[in-house]
Image 1 (cartoon, helix red, strand yellow):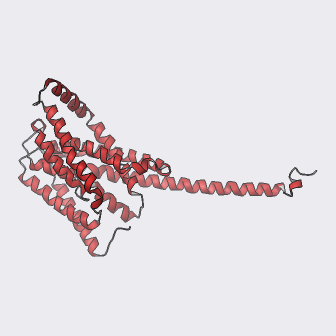
Image 2 (cartoon, rainbow, N blue to C red; image 1 turned 90 degrees about the horizontal axis):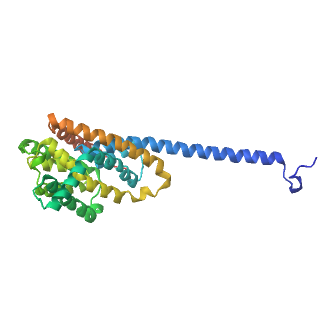
Image 3 (spheres, rainbow, N blue to C red; image 1 turned 90 degrees about the vertical axis):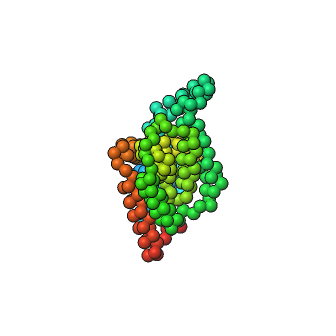
Length: 305
């Protein structure tokens, strides 16, 4: 019997072999794509761990992410690493949700009653005013500051010494109810230093708070609250590309979830830790981190471009 494709000069067995070959190629491509997504997702989990822990401890997330990616040879785009900070934003907002609601509602009530001495009003104004210096400086100077290992090493050592000095001379007698608008302005100016890679946003604000005589836990708590607007706006601005990159959507979601989990744990742990302990462990760690980088640089190590 004449095959339906015979009049075209095509053998059915050839069609079957060709189709099978196409399916094999498609399966191989799918397998490669799935492997790539899986690998990127695993890397996103690890980067989320590093970002989540170092964002809120006074040791600089930018420094650790830059060094960590280079040592492991991972080549994620910077916008991807910036975008997983959404997990940190979600974590800090969720952790301090009750505080934020109380501050906003209390500030609104104080505004209506013209009760300018209310704690919530002073906190709200202090946070808003303290956000302006970091946002303005970030907009003007962000692209002018290089993320180089040498800068990170030197800055890490300098910030360690400043944190140690704040531990030594800070009175640590002021509680949360003593915060004034001027504290928001001064801590906000300290937050502006975090534009320099290696400074650490939480480290600079915590150090400033200690110099102002705040208790350790109060300084850390105010640092987190003050950082919410800046961290949120900076993350939105820096991660515009990642949100439109469909290829990296799954690893991005995985990275955000990982960052959220470890950020929340880091916030909770640090506030409990500072109730009974000092910041000297972070001082010594930052000194060791900076010194190790300087030694590595002197031996010829360079960050891959």
